[in-house]
Length: 302
Image (cartoon, rainbow, N blue to C red):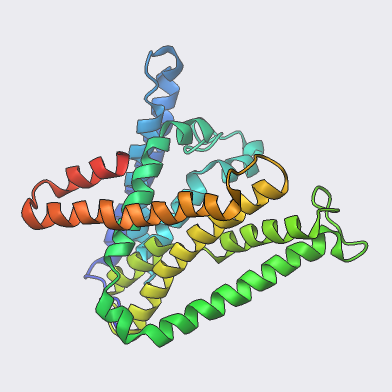
């Protein structure tokens, strides 16, 4: 992978101090708003949108601050998510932090209010990742991409599935409560579902690092292709394992058997998305090519 980060402009210390000042002002601003406003008394609770705006501004600033020490900006975004989320707030609950930091800016209620953005974010990430796949690049790096995928899928899939089967009671005295005593078929199916989650990686993070570092070349192309294709494998594998687990534990009868159910709900869905939705988007871009953002958002929520 080639490419390097550009040198920071002159006066980077002043720029860093300015970014720290912005973060501090945002923190005090959020505390002040929660101290003097009673959101619960309003017919519409604006805390979700307020938290969203704060996190966007703060994350962008923290990302720029992290960039001063030659780390990708996405590192700062991840740190912001950890700091402003509910997990750290629970750890620091004994310090008596002021609202909204006592429960985390991105607490459960706020996350519920912003759940509408989840669909949009996941869809945009998937579209962006898919758009980065080039058939010519796949052909050139087919052997390397296949080797990467095979090594990861086989090693992680087999090891995680086998480990889950072992702790489900296959080996005496190491059965975990709640899963000990599961039938072998059920344990393997659940293990495969856990393995598919363990196999997942973030194409958004990979794309962000590649774009920021301006990396280019065969290795970059192969890594990005492997990450995107692996996510496709993860989605399909998780769906298949989930159906098998539900069938094993008796959570619902499947008409026509597992094979018929998988054919209807997975294969047909993939074909519909690839042929119908993909074809319509290609036709729109080719013959209309106007207001693409509105068109994409409309497709996402249909």
